[in-house]
Length: 325
Ligand code: ACO
Image (cartoon, rainbow, N blue to C red; front, side, top):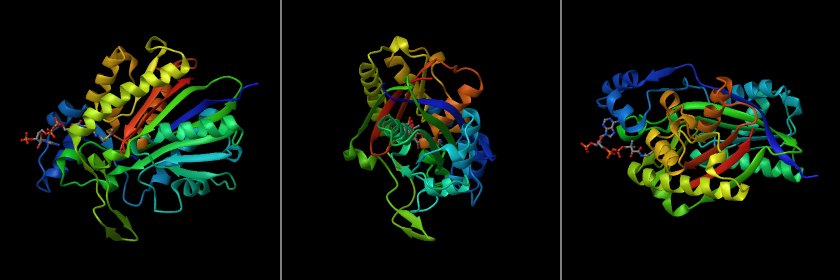
């Protein structure tokens, strides 16, 4: 009998501090940086984002999302035999956020590691967990996307600092006789490293290089809309399905205009697209599981629905996962 993986529970967590565009514009104005709600909404669709308080780390957000997903799946942390955290903003260079999170969950022994594929991190992590479950290396996995992007933003650069937020989302993925995860498709092209990167880092209070995010927004936009269409078509072809089989498109929540363009190319109406970028901003690897969980909990997404999850981000990396929930 074939072995597959299936999502059995979802969870998410947002740090309580919420800033509307107007709140952010006021904070930035006090540092001489000018922006407005109109500009941000018009160019990105973002209206608000959450920022973690000082001292709150990736694993703190991730563990809350993980607990919520475990509860939804009716599982105890002690039953989990694989933990993968997708993040580009881990608590420290090492150990991984996954190891720190495992300890916060009060368990030990199962493998725990981070996946770093920036905004594609969650689709990468889900693909790895699916493969490990299919081979029998795991039976019940926690797959988490957790980010504190506020820590790597240059708040003097209005072209980037208005775009991102902090948060975490998680799923429990379990071995199953039926899919579940129907097909996956991942890609990377390292020649685009320069259009979206954080070239330096901070460790132990020492700054090495420039530790803040740099982006060529227009180049990212163009690349993203092309590869998202390609990944969607590739994963549908692998699954032997068509656009008409998609109940919900859950794209990486970077920018409403990128999502509209992807939906148009796939001939999907926007009411089949889960949009949370307006309330969360771009939370990188957390954006897809956050959007998934919010739509599951609001009752929009139902058991049995077919979901297309799509990520794109620095690297450049991109990919898609087709899921029967
Ligand atoms: N507030 C007010 N004005 C601003 C702001 C701001 N926050 N940021 C830029 N501007 C100004 C610029 O200075 C410029 O002014 P000028 O014409 O006087 O020089 C003007 O607005 C236009 O700037 P552009 O950079 O050309 O604006 P654009 O229409 O390209 O929008 C944006 C910028 C929103 C970043 C767009 O390029 C984009 O969405 N790119 C995709 C990038 C993205 O989503 N990245 C997320 C990370 S990657 C990922 O997750 C896949």
